[in-house]
Image 1 (cartoon, chains in turn orange, green):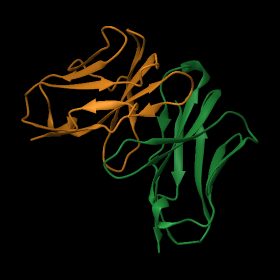
Image 2: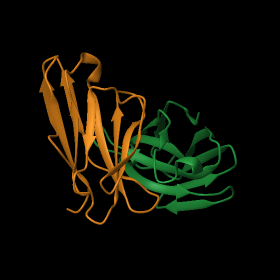
Image 3: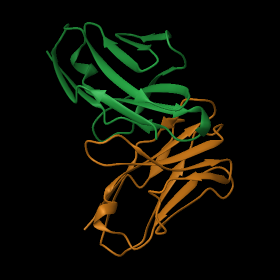
Length: 111
Length: 112
């Protein structure tokens, strides 16, 4: 399968812990995106990379969130000091032209 | 600020009963409008990109159309496997290559 992959698929953590998610985009795609989706809502944009450069960050991305794409391939999203409000599906997408192709998501539950 | 409103929130159809989903949008300079399908617990699956008013795209039982203010997703003779949430999103010219702004989706259920 050559689609976008995300790991882990599910993560349960306690409030105050740090968590890190990984995204592997489609291999020839130079753009990578992170979105967050809560139940009954559409995905909300968090941040965007073109190659290894982080070009845009949403105001939703507080200081506790950091994302990297060190070699322009895979990306990581870290959340420090998790809060219950961080519980959501974290989606990664990649693109080469217009259409963005999404991975299966990481479901985060903060207890 | 870009805005996308989808209606209805939920739609229940009988198999074979055609209908349309609506996506109204406000964006300063549309670069593209996108339709996605999302099954429970999965990521959105890309369906169509529309670029300009009057454009139409088709895929199996689905046809997407675009005007200057809204887009429609027409479903002809739906089958139970078409049951999913359908998401509409826009990308503005000023954010070329960047963010999509999504609506909240229409949850479609097709009964056999």
